[in-house]
Amino acid sequence: MGLTKKSRRVLDLLMFSGRDALTLAANPKSLIYGTVGWSTNRNAYRHIDALRDKSYVALDKKSKSGEWVVRVTREGRKKALDEIDPESSWNQDWDGKWISFSFDLPQAARKERQHLRKWLKKRRFGRLQGSLWISHREYAGWTKEIESEDIDPRSLLFQAVIPVGRQTSHEYVEKAWPFKEINKRYSEHVKYLERGASNPEKMNNSWFEEESNLWKAAFELDPFLPNEILPKGYQGRESWNLRKKVFSRWATTHLKSEK
Image 1 (cartoon, rainbow, N blue to C red):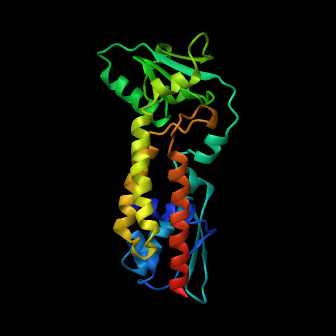
Image 2: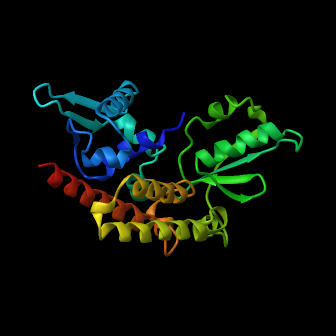
Image 3: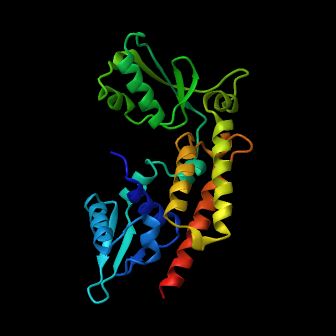
C-alpha cells in the first residue's frame, strides 16, 4: 500500500532536512503544521501515531513541554524511497554483469502481461526490445515474486549476461531507459527547487506538494545505475543533493521561527 501525501511529506522532511528529528510543538500554528497540512494538534498527533504503528517513525513524547520528537526509522526510509537508496545505488561496486529477463506469454494473456510489466517497472528493469528486459541489480528471488502474480514461472527466463563484441553497457543503458525524459524531469525539479531556495519562508503546503510531484515524476523513471554506466549529462544526483540542501534550509528557518 502506498503512502498518503501527508505521510510522504513527514518522511521527506525527516529524511531530507538533515536533522536527526523534528520536534512538534504543542502549537497548531507551528510552521511544520502548515507544511504538512495538519489543522489541529489532535490531527497531527493522530497521524504521527499511525506512522509509528507502521514502524515508519519513532516517537518520544515529552510530558512536561507537551512536545513530540519524531524520528524516521529504517523502515520509513525504505517505504518513502521505494526501497531504493540513490546514493548507495550510484556508489555501488558493479561487476559488469547484467541480469536479462525474457518471457513468453501469449498475447491473449493480457492480465498476466499487465501484471508482469507493472512488476518490471517496480523493479526498475529497462526494456531493450520486445520481451527482453535488463537490470544491473543482482538477482534476488524475483521468480517467487512473479509467481505471486499468478504467472507461470516456466514462461520466464532470467540470465546473467556480459556485453560482447561491439555492444557495450553504455549502449544497453541508452536503449533500455528513457534518460532524455528522465533528465528533463529532473531539470524541471531542479528549477523549482532553485526558486524555493531563495525564499524558504514561502515553502508552505502547496509548495511542498508541487515539489513532491516533480520529484516523484523523475524518481519513478530512474533506474539508479552505478556511476560507471550513468549516461553523460545525468541530472539525478544534482536533483537529489539540491533537494537535501533546500529542505535543510527550510528546517533551519523552521527551528529559528520556533524559538
